[in-house]
Amino acid sequence: MTENPRDHHVGMIVPSSNLTMETELPRMLRAREEVDPDDRFVFHAARARMQHVTPEQLRAMNAQAERAATELADARPAVVVTACLVAIMAQGPGYHCTAEESITAALRAEGAQAPVVSSAGALLDGIAALGVSRVAMITPYLEPLTRTVIEYLEAAGVEVVDSLSLEVPDNLAVARLDPADLREHRRQLDLSRAEALVLSACVQMPSLPSIQPVEDEVGIPVLSAATATTYRILQELGLRPRVPDAGRLLAL
Image 1 (cartoon, rainbow, N blue to C red):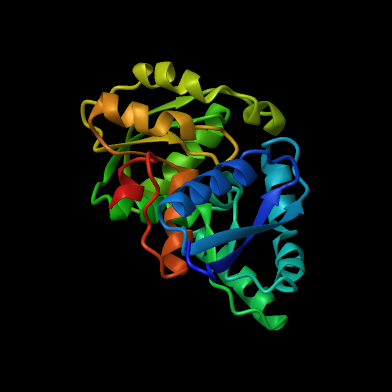
Image 2 (cartoon, helix red, strand yellow):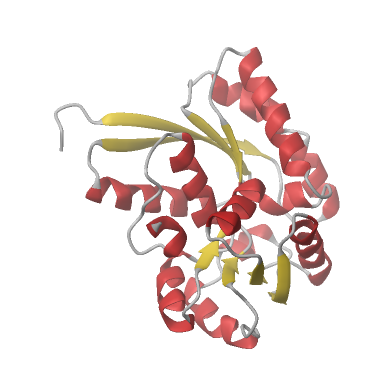
C-alpha cells in the first residue's frame, strides 16, 4: 500500500428496507482494494422510506430522493448512487435520466459536485459495455413489475429473450433470498438466444457469490444491477472498472 492511499467517498441513496446494496457494493470495492491498494472506498448512505415493492411505495420513495441527496451533499461525496432500479423504471422509459438530473440539481444547490449514477441507468450502460443487445433476466418482482423492467429495457434497445419472476413483494424478504439458489433458477431460462444474463435485475436481491460461477457455467457474460452499478461508480471516479471474480463486465 502507498503511504497515502486515495479515499473515494461514495454516497448511496437506498430504500429504507435495503440490506444488500450496502453489502455487495462495499464487498466488490474492498476486493478491488486488495488488488489496487492505492485506492480506498468510504461509504455514506441516506435512506428513503420503502417497505413493499408496490407502485405506490416506489413513487413515494422517488419523491424523497432530493431530500436524501441534500443530506449526502454535506459529506461532499466523490460520486452519488441512487440504488433502487425498479423505483426508477416503474416511472416509464428513460426516467433514469430525469432522476439523475434532479439528484444532480439537489447536490449542486448544496455546493456538491459529485456525478450521479442510477442503478437503472447503470444496468443499461453495463449491457452496452458488454457489446450485447439480447439478455435473459431474473427478478425478485411480481410478474407485472418484471414486465415493467422488460419494457424499460426494450425501449432502450435491449431485447429480453426470457425472464423469471420470483414473485417476492416484501423488500426485506428479497434481501433474505439465498444467492446460491440463482444457480438453479437460471436453469429455468432459455439462454439459446441470450448474449448475456442479468442474474439479478434488483439491487436488493443478493447475487454476487453466484455471478462468476454462473458465468463460468453458461459461457456468456453474467451481470447484475449491483455489478453494473459498481462498474459505473469506478468509471465516474476515473478508475479502471475491474473487480476480481465479479463477472466479465468488471474484467473488461
